[in-house]
Image (cartoon, rainbow, N blue to C red):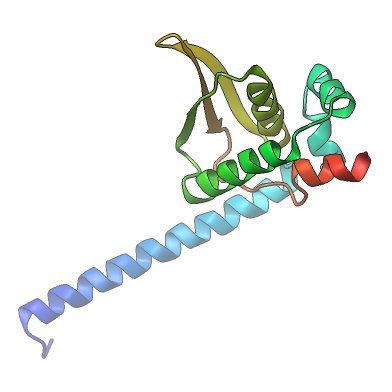
Length: 146
């Protein structure tokens, strides 16, 4: 009460921002706890999320690990920073699209290919409220089982 109107206003804004931050952190904590209860976390279970056809291809083909690791890094960086955004990539190489679809299934992301101006476009989105990548990345899991 002994402060000027401006100081009181700044203090109230500070308190509101702190309350918002606490609510956001509390929600994130609840969401993570709920996610951990229901999510599939083991690398084997994540691998089983991949369609049978893609799993067979991943086991039988010589996978370009550098390409797969590059895609993993891009998705991890993108969805860690923007869990609700849509990742878009123009990919003419059909094998790279296959790798990205398999990687999305492994990471529990939704992916779709479509034609866009005569080229193939991939769109990837997170179907969950938060993004929590598997403990073991697909590239590491494939090296482990080979």
